[in-house]
Length: 138
Image 1 (cartoon, rainbow, N blue to C red):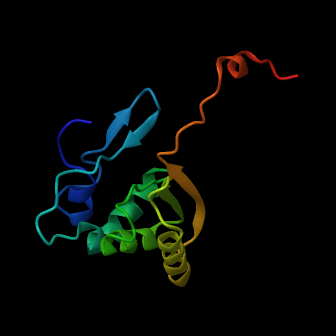
Image 2: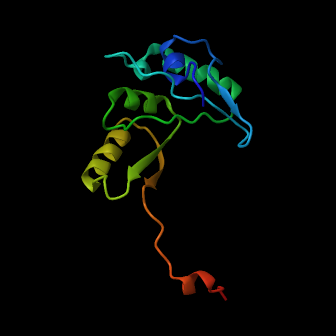
Image 3: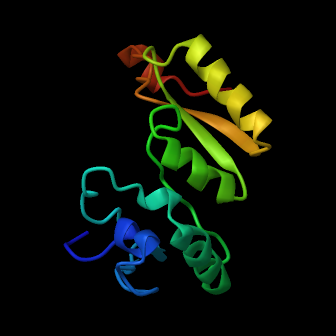
């Protein structure tokens, strides 16, 4: 994506709106990269600027997607999720426990944050034999 300001700088107020947004021509989308590493103790996602910057982005885009850190590991990510229209929860295949997922979904429900679905990362496609690959469905 290249260097320059990103979401951290925008949401903390260190960059002007629109700065750091990059056009991905192949996918016909605009992307705002994460930006630089936060300073120790900085919680840019909890910043008062976040709500205002999201509102400004929503004026120019039909859809704004935030990729956030793990909601159970970062309270500022949970604060950002509360400002979103909805959340798609991503779990890691065979690494996220059912208890942890249940706690997260309960927490989101208590905060009335709508969950639109679950995605599983890290699952491998089942191996198929050469015979199965050449079969034509009837």
